[in-house]
Amino acid sequence: MDNLGSNFIKDVMIKDLESGKHDKIITRFPPEPNGYLHIGHAKSIIINFGLADEFNGKTNLRFDDTNPLKEDVEYVNSIKEDVKWLGFEWDDLFFASDYFEEMYKRAVLLIKKGLAYVDDLTADEIREYRGTLTSPGKESPYRVRSVEENLDLFERMRNGEFANGQKVLRAKIDMKSPNINLRDPVIYRIAHATHHNTGDKWCIYPMYAFAHPLEDAIEDVTHSICTVEFEDQRPLYNWVVEQCEMDSKPQQIEFGRLNVTNTVMSKRKLKQLVDEGFVDGWDDPRMPTISGMRRKGFTPESIRNFVRETGVSKGSGAVDSQMLEHFVREDLKLKSPRTMGILNPLKVVITNYPEGQIELLDAEINPEVPEMGTRKIPFSREIYIEKDDFMENPPAKYFRLFPGNEVRLKNAYFIKCEEVIKDVNGEVIELRCTYDPLTKSGTGFTGRKVKGTIHWVEATNSVPAEFRLYEPLILDKTEDENDAEEGKTFLDNVNPESLVVLQGFVEPNMRESRPHDKFQFFRHGYFNVDPKHTTVDKLVFNRIVSLKSSFKL
Image 1 (tube, rainbow, N blue to C red):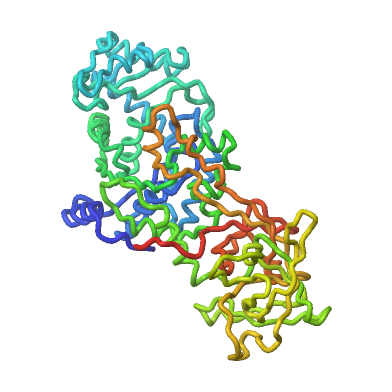
Image 2 (image 1 turned 90 degrees about the horizontal axis):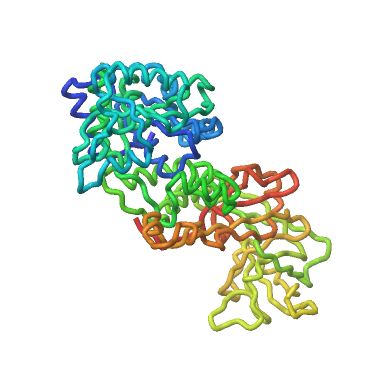
């Protein structure tokens, strides 16, 4: 697996191993199953699994399923698939819900130590009492409840005697702390809801900030790697581990999260795009979800290489989305067969080519990889070319097809436009051309030269295909910039032209293509056979990326 290079987290691990603090590195990837994973999660997966692999350690996959109102087994299954597709295998599979009984006991321990209490304040009152970054909080009137009363109320909470929101359990720390996270945070709330893993066994659920450090400690995680937004919660993380008297003492380390231009990186916002019909599901190729990128045609190697290049640091600046596209081009250019597809067809009849004759021409499968061999392309009197490759009244320096001009057909012959056929509305519907049989590609023809080469597909044997061309779903703004604009949401920057669907043709050798087969279409870019819409009778291709970019590493 790919090496992540030098970074500050690796330095900590090296020091801990050399000092004898740990004899084995144990990490975990702990997603909440409340949505599909996106490219930001890919960075966390690659860091956690990658660093553990480098030190011959282990990585657990753990589902932080402490909120039954938002979680679903659909998300559990999708996350497992994504981790495996990226090329990683977890050592152990856990659920936070596996530890609910142990977490309850640790909460009872805090109550007995006088470090937790049942509070009757409403959520709004708790928020008001908490104070601000510049003003201290004030103590709840229920903070002085006795240990005995708190134990009784907490047990009754568990037994289902109270309604949602009627009571919570809070840690008793310091309402004047400059760190708001330490101002008596809520550690348990009531939720009468069926849990995907535990059913109706529980009606109280631990909060993430309480559950997460306990999960790490129970699993003997050595380094709890998370993104920088959790840095302010590290003192609470350490407090929970210490005051709950956990034997294992994991260390939380934060890295800068991955932000990509023109990309939404919030599961809440991605769910909104799905729920409101802006996309056709979590795996829509315009989505930055791992499943969406897989369906579009990205390879796991390209994503791993991209993450490795972005590095591991504390910074969270936005990375140009073209950088991600660069890595998929680099990966596909030596793997993908070359072929020709006509996305917007215009029929051409070669009037001096023998009627009924079909000629098989040779073409390299991938010129950069000669060992991939050659393919046969049928050629006949009728072909399709791109409408964009013809202009009736071209500007200067236009080297493609126009009346009286001659071009080379890729891997075939020179043709010359002799006549333009139009419909009743004046639209060009067909070209009549002639060909020169002496100009066959590969014969060493050294006569006259032409400046333009265009691609084509033989008409009578061609395979109908649908082509889906994608542009960024979100225009020109980072997620934070969208939120900062007064009165606007990220939905105001959804690109209405993020998907263009075209009907065209591909070479007959493409007929047996299967979902996720990848090709480079001459001049158009890299394409992936869509697994969702392709059927026995219809090929659908998603464009992964165009052929070229101005991006430089």
